Length: 135
Image (cartoon, rainbow, N blue to C red; front, side):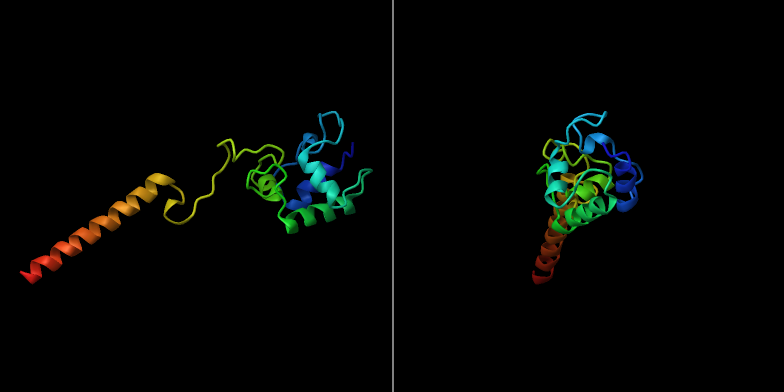
């Protein structure tokens, strides 16, 4: 186990917390390095033994490569930034933050439905006024 790694991950990614050892290890006591995140880090040059430079380089490569170790659609370093676990597919299970875009941002499907209803109402009122002028 490399005791300095959680603090270095926190510092390097500007996290508000230090990740738990389980981010890479099978157990809190520093068991086998066996998580999906650890495998992705190893594939990008991560080595044990307290090598903080290799840790930083692997984290940078993870961000550059936009690695999603658990396949949930969230990039690992982003997941760490909002306190998620890059080893657990939280989005696929329906928990964790969901992205919002366009009309649905902040409100999901109800916001989109309201936007469509307003657009239809404007179109109907516009058509009614246009017919009134033609008669």
